[in-house]
Length: 98
Image (spheres, rainbow, N blue to C red):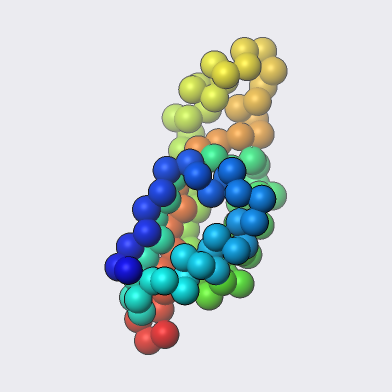
């Protein structure tokens, strides 16, 4: 595969590391992972980066979308859930020389 895209599915998996390993396995050298998903805070972003790195990916970029905070705030008004959850784009590459 050249590219894997996904929209808010990986966060549902209790085995995210396995998801990333399988994604890496099926990508051709130089392939790319490009997903949008929900992440829970800075610690989860760090964990996702580590999982992607451990799977073999490089050029990892996880970019929270600040605009998602208002949408998430509407899920549970007054609970400040938007302080812990955010939508993010997650991008990573399989090295071309792999």
